[in-house]
Length: 184
Image 1 (cartoon, rainbow, N blue to C red):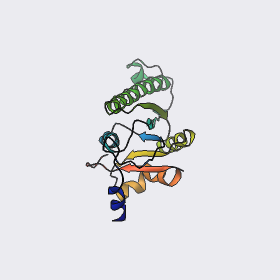
Image 2 (cartoon, rainbow, N blue to C red; image 1 turned 180 degrees about the vertical axis):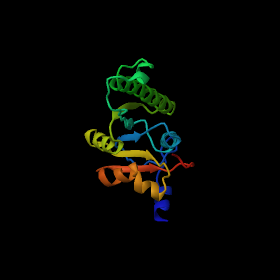
Image 3 (cartoon, rainbow, N blue to C red; image 1 turned 30 degrees about the horizontal axis):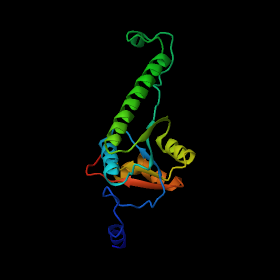
């Protein structure tokens, strides 16, 4: 009750957003992937939270794991696809995944520009939780925004929640945007 009263008593800025930042520009990182939750979270942020004075980083972390097949002298099934080795296949797959990730970030950046928000796109590779924490510390991020995937308690136990990990390990604020859909 107090929180709702507090927010409704805040001044609205000139574009109708709640002005919680005062006069200081913010460094904001929005973690994105290709899920519907990410798309909805970005849309919500653009409509309700971001300001043109903010420094906004659109961050995608590629949790790239190469195909791991035992090396043998003869790989006829790979050679049939034009690959002499598993490492050649992995190099091509890595390149394709990186290109798709950059295309995704460019689309998100175009969406932000429609709202007058200029962004920097960042493509990282590694474990999502760790890479987001390292990036936030390195760039002195004020808030990291993630979408909620709607994991069940069992899924959170076995898979782990990125937002939960960030909330417990980052030294900045973490905003989890709940969307209208159960996203996976």
